[in-house]
Length: 387
Image (cartoon, rainbow, N blue to C red; front, side, top):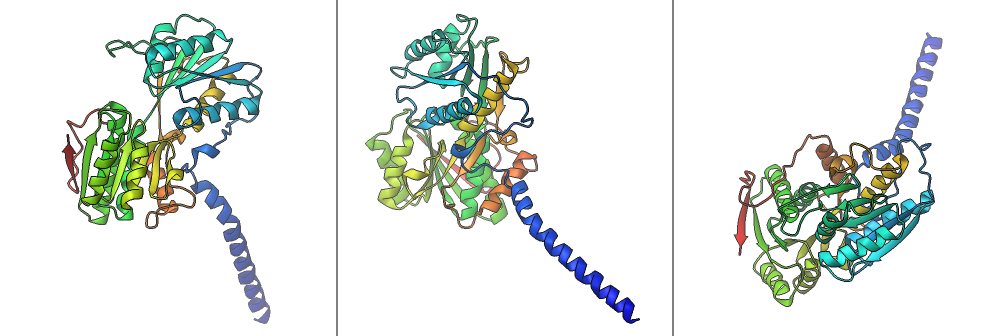
């Protein structure tokens, strides 16, 4: 009997020690496996599935930017991605800044990049899309990677994407959903959305935000209001900033701003009133502690993935050549960046990771809308449109 008890106690002790070791070992692994939601696009470095598949190197990648160059915004994050890839695999990276914001300016810069001997030219935005429509067949040895647009004529009545071109569109509604769900979970129920224009990309941010806010409001049992306004200009002004200030002073707790440099007005308005803001496209949380988060397109991550795909194949493959790719949750191409340290209290980083995984695996869904004439059913969120 004593031998049995001794053996039993020994087995119990060993089992307990094994369980403790398993638990201790599981913690880092569990953390690694659950951190699938991107929180800082600036730190991303692409890790290929097959590390033995290495691009050959030795060629030039050119980035065509707007007149501000690589100082800020999407061009800054694209340049970071291009440089990271080039430095990792032995490529040369060059930039060509357009003299202005017109399609003619973009065309001049694109031609300079193409004539420089670059193998691949990266560009972004509507002006580049119009310019590329004109010149995409002129340089048979040059390939193009266009973000946020497709090659089109001046009035958008015609589209054509040549075999040398690959287009990448972000699913803004997915980034918007993350922000809407987060801010309502955090307790903000009087919301505003101000966009530059009622164009598809910004509308997708707005309607994604609306769907995320509805999902959180239903879960929290809250009634939420969302006021919307489109400024019809990409440039911020004193009048636009004052409109934001008035919204805050009249009870709006948090405003999302999307497009152009409206974030400048939002930063000024929150600093004057004590309100909170969310921006879109790229991370602006460093501009003010009152910018609660940014619903971003992960340009750095996306361009590194595209460059790796292109250069390991030597050209665009059959699924990419002349095609448009929509990227979002499934490749980590959209994110909610909420500063360092994390600026939400109620909506934790664990909540964010869980939400992202639910969306990535389609447990939760968000739909894309091209305009505000037909909106999703949101019984818990009342939308008020302001002209």
